[in-house]
Image 1 (cartoon, rainbow, N blue to C red):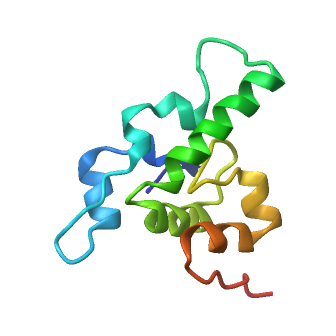
Image 2: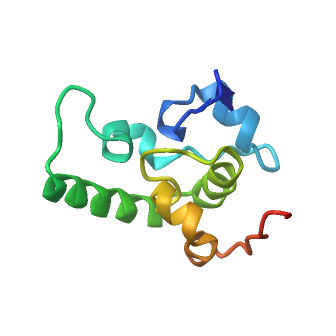
Length: 115
C-alpha cells in the first residue's frame, strides 16, 4: 500500500491494509513489527547516534528473522522500494544493492528488475 507515493512501513499499516495485502488461504500473518514500530522505523522525536541506530537495527533484524510475515514483507519491500527503516530484515540500501540478501532471509528467489 502506498500513500502519496511514500511507502508505508508494515508496522504502520492498518489491520485492514495488512489483510488486503498479505492474506494467504484465509489467514493473515501479523507482522511482528506492529508491536514496536519505532524499532523498525526509528524514533520520531529524537536523533539517534550511529551506535544507537546500529543497535536498534540489529534488534529489528532479529525480530524480522522470526516474523510470520517475513516473506510477504520482503515482497512488499521490493515492490515499494522503501527509503528508510528495516524491511524483512534489510535496510533500503541493502534491498537496492543486494536483492539476494532478501532472498537469503526469506527463502524466496528474487527476480532482477527488467532493463
